Length: 82
Length: 131
Image 1 (tube, each protein chain N blue to C red):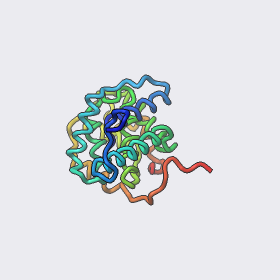
Image 2: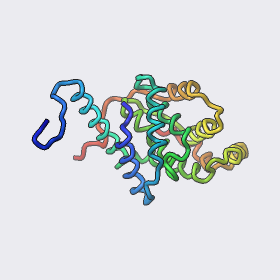
Image 3: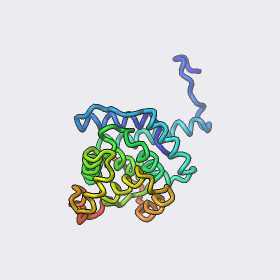
């Protein structure tokens, strides 16, 4: 145990490797959420609006899709998000 | 590697603030989704994006009013985390969500759809290095 009282994994130990992997994963995740790629963000916002609009009413949403009046269908001709 | 719950909640909180929204979510449901995703992926990293998407779609109130946003963002982010790129059209993902909510889509079916749209990417830094 260090003087500060924190428990640290021994360098090179399996738990140290796990800690390092988790720190790297956290860093990637937060960097992504701080600045998502613009195309992904646009797709996320569009789908988010649809989910908020319809909620659990999947019957109504499917009816709108069948009728071609669902807001996300206007994006159908755009290239796929990568 | 799937994200840890605390890290996921912090990412969500930052995203919600960026959108000018309160970071209202159901941490218990999100934790349950992470555990389910872990089980579904069975340690196979390329299956983690679909496992996370499926498990979260089954919990429609996990991220409150930002549920749809988070489903897209997390599927794409998890793919990147395992050096894959997901190609999709938003309406397709929305239809999958509807079918999952209606219990009309199994994990195996969705896994096949994702597998056909995930491609390897060269490892590159994100965010891009500033010059």
